[in-house]
Image (cartoon, rainbow, N blue to C red; front, side, top):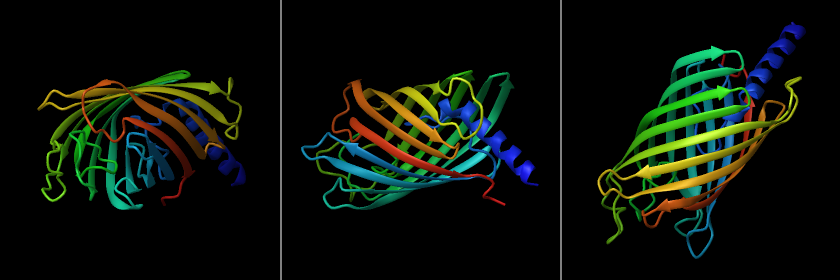
Length: 270
């Protein structure tokens, strides 16, 4: 029995390390966590757009029900409106419906959806469903793994719930938003995988964009990041996103760092 358990751990670790370069920092891949596993994340975001530095903390729990379906539950807390307080929460679900596997490569397509609530006042036309707005989102993500390089593209559409009490006088209100991204990840270490305890070091570069279909306003952010994976269970992310071009005013995520730690528990769902 012990030998079987060790073999299973090594296999899971090999799968995670082999595709670690698609564990993107600012977006989600089409691939899912191992079946019956639970992940716990703690993310801190710091934003430099205001005269004073502000930050947001996002505790998150992830459930992989099977190889195709997983769900995230998030809570949002920040000091963006003065004192540090609870802002709201979000539920995110992803269903993988295409999976093509080959030697040292695979291709995935998944559909995703999100519903979020937030009690923050509205200052901008941009829709951010991870803390700033209440609304719904749906879309598709396409991920291709090619040995040590992973590429992913996301296309989504968001709708913000209208709330007159949160609308700031004279400020543009969010309505609908088209979002899109192109992400790349490269496995730097290890050069040759030997066992699941070996640390992984991954480099990422992501392009994150949105367009308001009503006004035509848009922006494009660039987001480099680094990642370390320890014992195939613990993940540490550090990234920074900044605007390359755009004309949407008063954005929350225009200049933002992201620091995250994640712990995974395999076979936790019986």
